[in-house]
Image (tube, rainbow, N blue to C red; front, side):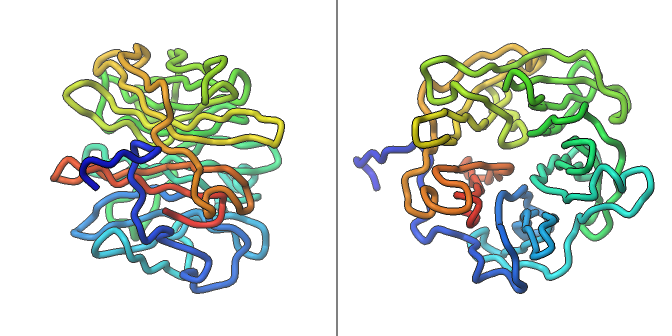
Length: 291
């Protein structure tokens, strides 16, 4: 509303949540996080849903307007039966982040198995068939997101290793072998993101640099609270931070963000930049719904 300032920079859709348990066409335990893209005139979400067997998988949800979605019954990405990936995905897959690159859509997701959590990179051209490419991280690494173009002739990937709680960047010539890693952002003592941080949305290229939405965790006497902030990274050297928000742009304030399977928690893995310049940020709230 013009002339009125809310507590957050991000303005919530007044009909939130977008997807709840009532919208899922089967019984499930949990519902959280959604990668997103606009494809062939539709809004497409890749939503993580944990079924009653305890294994999360990634499901497609489609919408004509980006607000009202239909979820498919069968997963788009489930635990692999391929021998090269099976033991690394046996406990489930989650947190898909979609990046359009060249003539395909690349998806980085978390795979859980007996050896810990790793990042897996795959691709699709039509969101019908999905091809796994490679495990692209060390064990216990999360929050992986691919940049939508090469930087100085190399592919670039953001990731968050377990130790240190920081956002790193890695480079590759072939999308399979990754190295030349550098720290990009670190937690800040005394701030809302003092515990650990990680990439939320795949970087969005703007005139000012790469717009990065990231999550930050703060420990309190009552548990953790997770919020979303923003930073601008240099276009040709994304390890260089040009700007970083002092305050979060979205904090858990609503009841559906405060209370759920994971309290006081807002977490995003996807956003869509509209032709109008507006950004639609899709986020999971309290591991209970998509907003």
